[in-house]
Length: 186
Image (cartoon, rainbow, N blue to C red):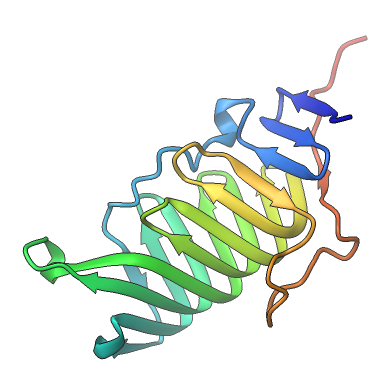
């Protein structure tokens, strides 16, 4: 039997096996309709352009911003395609892989994890390993977080997939969370 609990005050939906953020209230949907076509700006201590491999490796205090969203990490690899006839020198970014204390913020939501993959074409950010999603005093933790930038829906699972270096399941293999509850008058 599947049980569902909707907490309208926080904008979170809890189901057996996963927690989903962003389905109840407008405040939880700050990632919704993110413009992944907006320019991607970055700063870092070091940049290495690997032109034959169509990628750029940036490292050291990396900060990437796009349309009000910020992604911080120790290291990122940016995969791109040469697109003659398009703006920005004919380069189109497809994917950003980030590792080392990855933090994604937009508005009052913050997501943290060991590694992250930002697929700009699918408008998905997948974070793995010791993930935490916070909005104000509300907090969810688990092993994997998938943020859909189209819908604003975020899903947290207890276990990360892959099991590679830098990824780990949550200590219990389950999702845990803390939600604030509005104070009621008796």
